[in-house]
Image (tube, rainbow, N blue to C red; front, top):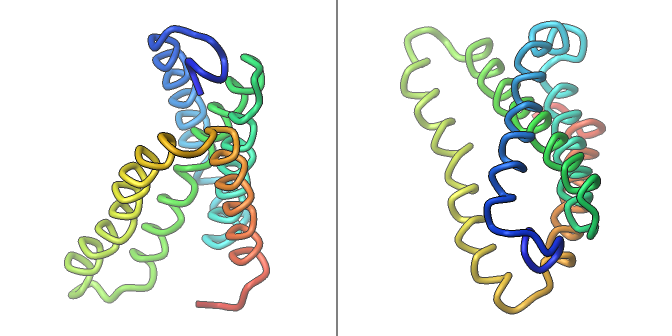
Length: 152
């Protein structure tokens, strides 16, 4: 995305990460209020929507769109983590909280490691714009499942 999509030097990725971090900080500052207002599922669904839109925006060959996408990704990802870990703390009996939280952390972070590995292979054979657009669309489908699915 940085070199082939935007024609930028690799160092531009650092700018994108800084903007993504700013989105995460903004979410962190508002998380308590939003979580109380939306509940865990709504907060997570909103975060997945932000993430999906952000990833899709990164498919565009435009600096402003990619920067906006980075901000949205940064704002969206913490919502999912905060919502999931809040639900674990709320729903898990105190005597099981430690082992449950450890397992949940594994379930939350392992897919990211697998996705990084898969993504590294896929960019060698597929256009990054297609991969970003498909990932963004998949995130929006997941958000709809969270928002409109049953309790689970």
